Amino acid sequence: MQASFVSQRGDFGSRLRSARLARGISLRDLSATTKIGIGSLEALERNEIASLPGGIFTRGFIRTYAVEVGLDPESTVRAFLASFSVDAEVDLSADADVQEGDSAFEHRQQIARVWFQLTVFSVLAIGLIAYLAIAGSSASAAKDTVTPLRVTTTDR
Image (cartoon, rainbow, N blue to C red; front, top):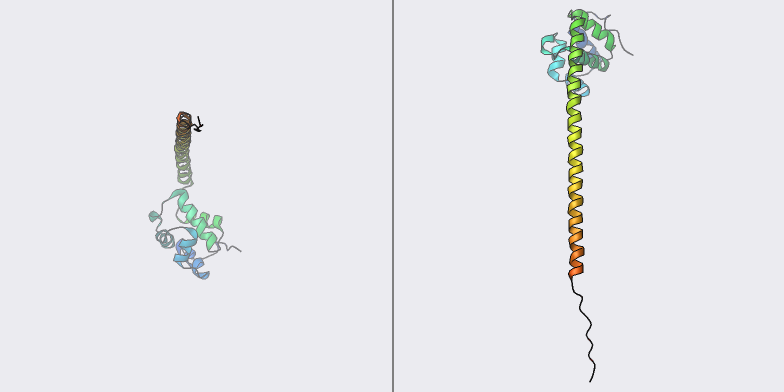
């Protein structure tokens, strides 16, 4: 069952810390399960928002943190946005930047995929040519060998 973040008292970071401690979770354990660095978790608990990456990354950190300590992730994010007067327009522009970055990333992935396919095709073609060359030379070598005739002697 998830607790409501809004109903707790104190500043944002101390409420996160209280929820974590109530569950008996250490920062190291929380870092291991969430894959968020201990420094970022400490910054969240100390309200040092400037130390965090910002935009959707911070919201993702907060959602993940909230889930692990049993808080409702959406109400926790809303409380964060209200506590730090984060402008929704700034957050939306951060989403747009990531989407633009994603399209550039997808383009690089597509180019890498084409190069990979060309490399695999080239290696297979060279391997086939080498095999045929070796097989052809051993077949012609077999034709060039002289088979000795059986010599029989006859008495005269």
